[in-house]
Length: 271
Image (cartoon, rainbow, N blue to C red; front, side):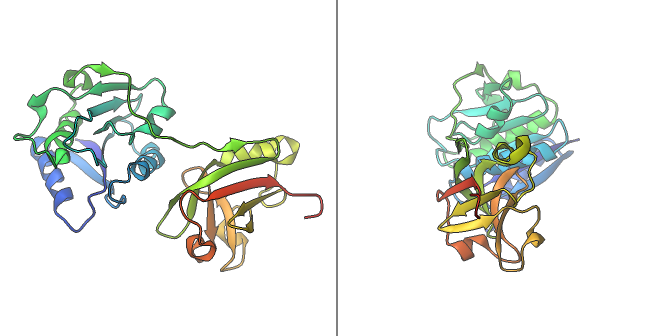
């Protein structure tokens, strides 16, 4: 028994997800497969990395994560297993594991070289079925990561959260729009505490304001802190600042999209 969480950009129209699951179950029939999501936008490695980073801590210790958003499939990009204190991750070496590696600087990485654990023949277009899925299945059966290949250090990393912190403001950007129209930024909520009075002991909405797309948006604790249809900014489930609308869509109301800038600043004395 064991848990294997599967994330991909395969969608739900085609049989690809089911095929990978079939291969995994053929190797370890006892494993419990959890579909983290298969609706990552096609080839959007950053989005896959963000979802994986935002979700993995919710899983029991020992969970194996299979993360396949792989525009470089069939190329010379490497196949990896990254092992942290509590989890193991199987993925292409294209930055999808950026958040995991930044969270755990003690993580170990192994390049997958042992072809005896692959499904043969190996396709040039479906490594999730032929390489990543089988390897994840063997790991879920208790196999050591070390048998797969040599330890490696130079793992590809994406540009990750990069807010600019100033004396009286934090500047960031929108990095994701969820299915509710909430706009996730790259500003960790904890960064905002330093902007408030009394060493960060501030009440959201009283001392800070968010500016985005020409709007001033109040900080709040919950959606219902503002009237229906009104925008707000709050701490999202990833621990990042999000722009939202009570019973509505921040994306539709503001017209903001990924990469648009966001500023959080102290309110002026007459605001």
